[in-house]
Every structure is written in structure tokens, then in C-alpha cells.
Length: 218
Image: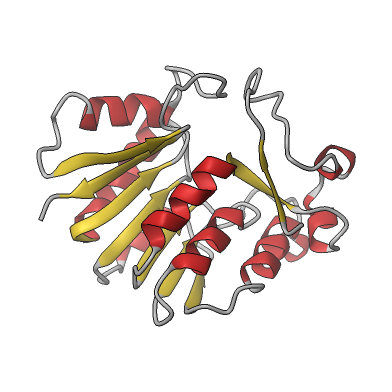
């Protein structure tokens, strides 16, 4: 098993259950890097399938917030064979950057698929956006989960999404059996932007568990 997804229902975001018991036995990322447990997905199987559906045929994709790389793997497995997937994460939470096993585990699992090209950007999304010029087919926003942090990512990156392109927010819906609450930053932002018609150039395309998918109108 390459990865373990979240099981539902979840009591809370501090009591998450995974499809592999090895996650509980070996929680640290070093065990994923060593291959002693699967990489941890921060999403459900339904969300994983949705990421792959929306990635099909896309040629320029960005993910903000990579963690152990399972959502990045989903995107890479489905994107266009001549596509490029840009993965943005500073992996700044490790005490010793040279021994950052979350980063190592992510690189390892994403490399199990050879489809297209992957470009790793070890920066905060704000810094990566400063020099960005490439039009995007799809972006996944799953970095800073504060309302201001998510809004900054949206403001910095949404302008690059092509008409007909897709933006996907994680942890952005309250759903039955889920872990999110109305206080979550992504939940508050997408409610304000897309449920109150304050973003007329965008429309909601799909909602799956905590994922909200929006499409830029053509």
C-alpha cells in the first residue's frame, strides 16, 4: 500500500482514523520514508478520486501544500503525459531541514509515478507567486489554513488560472461525518467567495467531502 486515506466518520480533526493501522503504530514521517508504513493522505478516498478526475488532461498544475505527497501523486497519475506539476511547500516545520522526512517521504511517493514532469518549489506560496508567469489549468490550495492565509493564496494565484481552469480548496466544506467546522479558514473563505456570489467569474463545479472545486468561467 503506497498511501493511507482518511476513514469516515471522523470524531474531530484531532481523532482521525486511517485506512492502515500502521499509521497509528508509526506516526513519524521517517517511517514513511523508510517504507515501514504508507504515506499519509490528508484526504478521503472520495477526495482522492475527485482530485484525479479534475486532473485528467491538465498540462499545467500547481499544488500549494504537499505534506507527504499523496494528493500530488493523485494529480500526477491523472494529468496529461506531457504536463508539468509544480509542488509548492517550504517544508519548514522540521527541526532539522537536512533531515526533513516529510519532504523525503513526499519526494519518494511522487517519484513512484513517472507521468509528466514534476517541479519542486521549496518556498512559501507568497514567495513563489512573486515571479510566476505560467497560465494554470488547475491549482490545489491546501497550505496555510487560516482565513487570511487561504485568501492570500487565492488572491496571489487565482489570476493565473485560465478560463475553464480549476481551483480546488481542501478542508473547505462542513460535511456529515467530517472533521471540518464552520470556524475553518477555508470554509469561511469559500462561503464568502462562492456561496454569496461575490466572485462572478467563478462557479462551483463539484463538492466532495471537504473539497470544493470551482471553475473559472469561459
